[in-house]
Amino acid sequence: MAEHTIASALEYASGRFSGVHDSATLDAEVLLCHVLEQRRAQLYAWPERVLTASQWRAFERLVARREKGEPVAYLTGRREFWSLPLQVSGDTLIPRPETELLVERALEQVPAAAAWLIADLGTGSGAVALAIARERPACRVLGTETSPQALHVARGNARRLGLANVSLVQMDWCRALATSGCHLIAANPPYVPSGDPHLAQGDVRFEPRRALVGGEDGLDAIRVIGREAGRALRSGGVLLLEHGHDQAPRVRDLLADQGYRTVRSYRDLADKERVTQGSVP
Ligand code: GLN
View 1 (cartoon, rainbow, N blue to C red):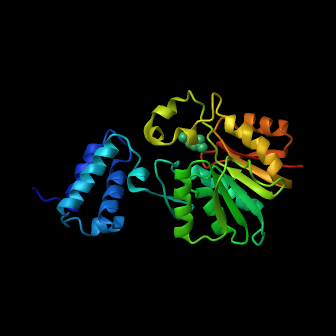
View 2 (tube, rainbow, N blue to C red):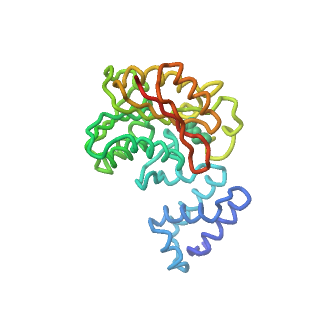
């Protein structure tokens, strides 16, 4: 068998990906780092290093799967969110940079030493719950999730990060939470309309539908969460929701109709209204 060096392996993979993915070189690097258990800088420090036969076979298999469209995060099982290294699987969404806005806006409301009860509904890999728990150690953060597989991933992440102030429980949104117990509830719910053509494109094709699709107008889960959170939040408590870039006016109307006060939206780095909040009177 021909020998494969780091440089030739990268060239091979970038070639297979070019025209298929716009991140061909980066994808090749990340997959090779995963197989070699090395950092990216090391690839360029030792380009002539020869891969073992089994490393090459493992790399070839990942390259073939990526070529068919599987997200890099699912192939490596890893994604960083809020600078936390998280494990992800096909049972969880891949945490997105725009969801960091939800964390930022949540943290803005929580005084540094507050000992609040905070819930993250539909936590998936645990990204939002874990980021908040890390930043507010005096708070108790509860992540809820219906999928046992996703819950398993989230619990593994909490354990690896050594975060003792987070609990991950199997629950439909906040249905089983005590009335008026929470100071703040955050959620990145499924909000994509079922007919959205993006669902048939790119990485999204491989993500769990139940975490993406919110019915015909995308707002089914947000309606339920708005209703349930109104009961689970204390007086003055805040609900923060991520939603689609064009859904903010409808989410604001919906929360106002459900009795929330001081309803407002925030823009993400792409200048789209991406997060809306309301507070319980
Ligand atoms: N922002 C994601 C997307 O565009 C959707 C995530 C979600 O539904 N919570 O695919």
